[in-house]
Length: 129
Image 1: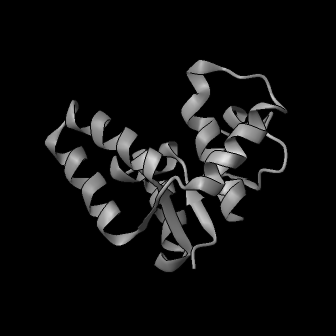
Image 2: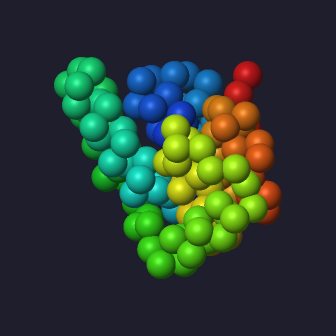
Image 3: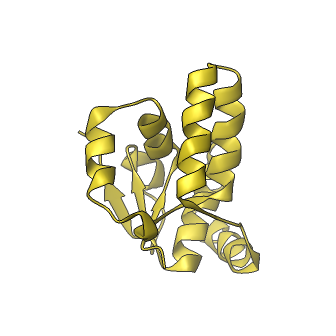
């Protein structure tokens, strides 16, 4: 059962070979981490336009880590969350990922904690330097 949800900044850094992120990930058990389907979708699209190597690395990560679907509980949590915070269209995916973490009872790991600072009830771990 996963304990941590990785946001796009973490998966992108890992797929790009960022050593500090890879070192921290290596300390976690593979069964303890998951990727939201939203992040997988976002990074698959972004990687396809950048380089074959990046796309390959994103796919390799996804083969080895659970990808959690955005389910009804996540959707309901997202709706409730929008009632508590200011909706920002440009941060919609971050807010959906946060809602999924909350609904699943998982700690969200990120390199951009400021993107989630206004979200109540979110368990957040920053790997920012």
